Length: 195
Image (cartoon, helix red, strand yellow):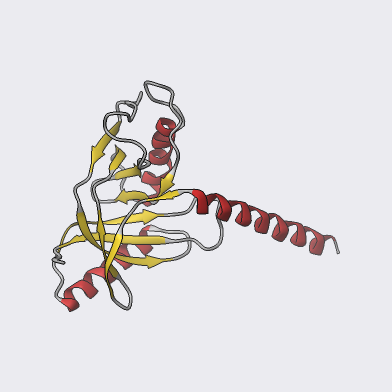
């Protein structure tokens, strides 16, 4: 009887957390892109230039990069900058395991002119180029194995379709760590594409 009650309370708590997280996620600004081609398991997208706050580290895997990288970037957007400005979180978080970097996309309301300078010199502000990417999606909590497997799967599918890619395969994470259900992850890589 006591076990059943604890289980019911735990499930109820998880559902409440999930509901609150889903509502907050729905209000989070998402990085803009346009789908230019859809395949069965991946799509080609055009991403316009964006401003990123990026940290680099000597991490060797997802776990080593995710927590410290997130803390540094969160420090910047939660007011760790020259004007103590709070900057809204956006989605997704970008991670490149090859360069051991993590990036937050800055909200579209900011430009290089009005984005405050980070207090932490390890946080770099960078602008990306316009780029075409291939993207493949997967669910659940991401791991190094998932990132490697889906990168390889995307690479194989691009080669089968004769689509040239370049640069590193990168991970995009869309959900906060405390959201247990409905998680969205992607692997992207730059592609040569003509519209």
